[in-house]
Image (cartoon, rainbow, N blue to C red):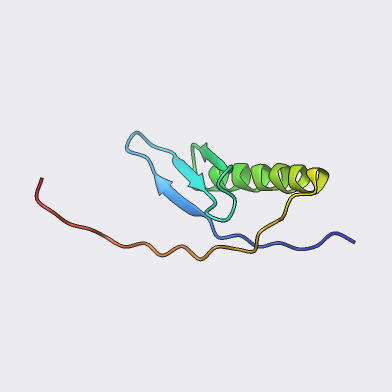
Length: 76
């Protein structure tokens, strides 16, 4: 029976449209999509591929990371 995994993702809107998605617990996952829905679907597909690779190679599948976002403001 397959295990269930849950990973936090960072969804970042891009200036020209679309979204980039990164998965802090799985740094090899970086993907994008034209819409939020497409970006998240692409992230899910990429996560599945990374988990399969890690299982096949006997590598650790990490637990979820809990990213914290902070804003830093400064004069340049």
